Image (cartoon, rainbow, N blue to C red; front, top):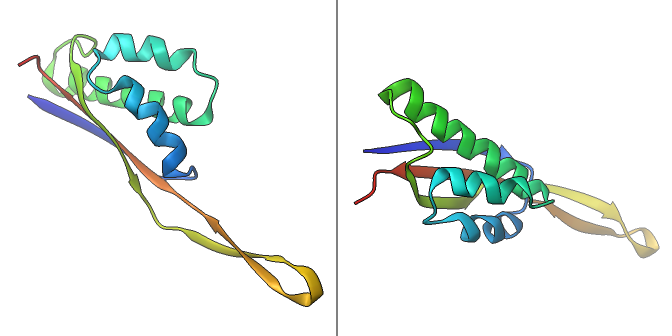
Length: 111
């Protein structure tokens, strides 16, 4: 059984979020929740929210406890980039890329 949760269009750079998902991949869901609770970063808070949603999907849709499942995939995909400009020297414009990401967490049974 595999259950997933997806959070789309998060205003966070994918590079920053991938640092967090590397830490929790392959762990049990309850252990990953404990780790994410004590990481003081925005990306940890958003990944924890998505993990909580995946656990709720297991409990509501399959009537099973979600904390016993293993995180088989924790993937950060790149979303659309917002392109903005900042004023530069001598009346020029400097581009700014505001990146977004999609967070996908897949929980599965122990194989």
